[in-house]
Length: 234
Image 1 (cartoon, rainbow, N blue to C red):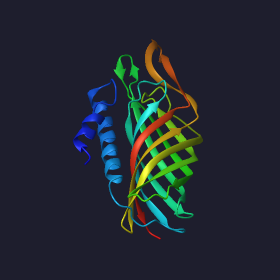
Image 2 (image 1 turned 90 degrees about the vertical axis):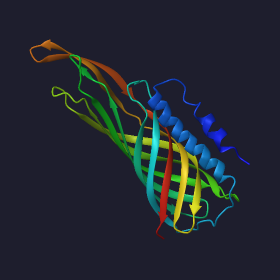
Image 3 (image 1 turned 90 degrees about the horizontal axis):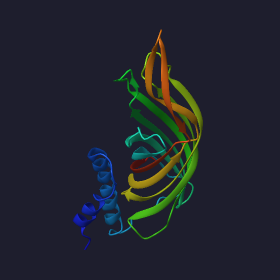
Image 4 (image 1 turned 180 degrees about the vertical axis):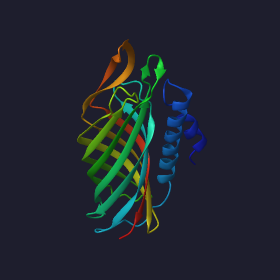
């Protein structure tokens, strides 16, 4: 018999230092993933999907920014996903993710609030192992195109936009919930090559001018843990 209380208590110890709010949200996601995996490996398998099956659904992730910009705290994203099954183990997947992060930007001591947002259109392959388990492990990888916007929030600075190729890879567990629905949990890494900067502080120099201090925003990556729910329509 699995001790779920022990699993949840153990996951609460993960997360290291940081604010209590950030640690609590992250540990909640990890505890949910641990519980899902414990249940997954203790239940019987259901029927497999076949060639030509199509699924569409929603996804959400809790993201940990992997970059030198410490002002970006972990946050949630949302997304859409589509799967076309080539056979019983492999799908072509098309998805979209929307990521948003806020950071402080002080102008003469007042926080104007800088925002960074990016939308990622993704195309990839997912391989799902044929195992006699209720939850089936899978691996996925692909490329995408991301467009980003940096809005400093100050009147004297313009927002900036750009776009480049992105890359992702991940692993997870998928569960078929009867004929029409499926759900899963996953760990992913999203890498977005780009070269820009974010403003940290601005000080007025008189005459409408400002001295602006910036941090480079180079090739950010995002480690995420998330869930996906899809509906079979063919």
